[in-house]
Length: 390
Image 1 (tube, helix red, strand yellow):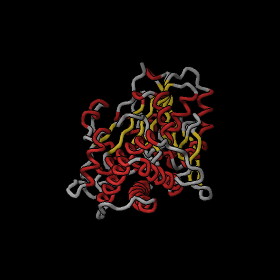
Image 2: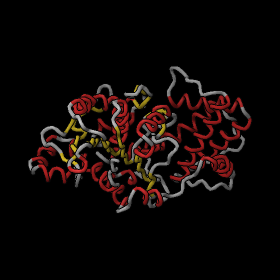
Image 3: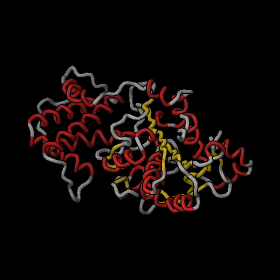
């Protein structure tokens, strides 16, 4: 049985892979010798880099502003890990990468499911390197894939590609944004295995909160490894790798699970919404816990709507337009769902520090106005977090 990376090793690798971005930095590191290069990349045991061939490049950015730079490295297993390999992928480190983070069009993953187009486009730029490595690496039984921020999303799509090649994979992400729709996340969970996906995130990190519905984290039906964060509000600082390393400390994976802060459960959604909509409800402005509950309640309501009228795909509309239409049609179809949607809107208003209007009419424009305020706030904080990595 292949042992997973420790939290400390995975976090060190996720942090140090940022050094591959610039050719000059990589050259400086590799000139120190193989042992020092491995150490500088967080490979303290079990893996080694080839200074001349391990680094790979990728292209990021929008349709016009695009740039090619170092995006990761491939390390070979040694000793007890001689039949393993490791792929580390960096996160945002330039304005071009930020464009990739924020593009919310969609594309098909290696397995044929829907994922974020910007992430997929960057993955496609270094996919030939991964494929070429697989073709010449006989005897590899397991590949570990590690990434932080944008690198976590790219690691997730890489894991999907490896699973399609029937390669046993272990995936480790830190502060990873939502990468694909439910179908993608569900099949990835099934193919890779829920026990082989280590999704680590701070309770107040805004980046894992985006993109919006219908993007979903993997593994599905799992909260992952949520780390507590000092302070109740959504925080840019919660996204930094140094702070993830500090929060992890010397804990094991089991220890991280035991120390996870309490987060609302599915069965609490209805009761929380009712309390939040009440004038005495305790929804604190910009509270991370309130944001997680709002997202969870939204997913719960969408599940109810799916059972009632079905979630029909709307052609030629944005993701936000689709969400607004689904909530509106659900409210029209069911009195109870209309009540839940109204309570959700009230909770969002309180989260944003606005006065909730009791009995406000649920029109398409009103729902769109409230949801746009919510997601503009979350997206702006997430954007600020990734820009601080540059």
